[in-house]
Length: 262
Image 1 (tube, rainbow, N blue to C red):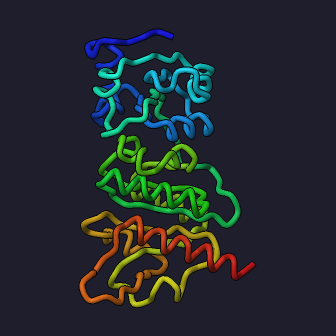
Image 2: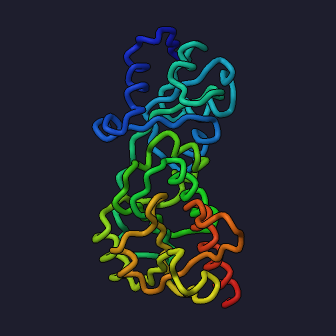
């Protein structure tokens, strides 16, 4: 195992450059930080290029699994702190090739899809992916994204679910054509909708569409949705929910409706 003790090492400089979206897209590489995230990346078959550990991981099971997949470098404490984007890094980091998935040619029977339009905050993207994994979504579509899936904060917020849930970024028109071609009903979410999420949730193939943090769904999706639903709010002050919370409520309502149908 090669040791890296300099913060000016070219591998370290590359890790720092990959904090920027344009560099991730240019090089096709992403940094995966955290023991849990690295382990889940391994379990899900993400192609790892290199891994980096501090002395606390020497001889560990994770270090052994990483070594079986790719070259592993030992970073001095100060060097690991330099490349870590977390306040209290846990000594594990990997460099991986960014997957480039496209919309699938077919869907499994009765799919449940989460469509997220124009997401801006990577933490919300990660939380949405984590929820999608928990509820068993067939696919997550990030339409007209304003942030990339592979932002370090998205990976962290997903707790590794980003590696297990099929997630595709594409344009809104392409996403709509795909859903129509596969007979998937589109449920748009809007605080202005007349019906609540527990009134008219389809039990068949369905895509729950949520909009970005500031404006909600655009007119494009509001016009093309098969049904518009809202999550009722009964308090006096709040007039909206976090997008990941709203998506979770609606996705689990689909799961409940399907369970009752069985």
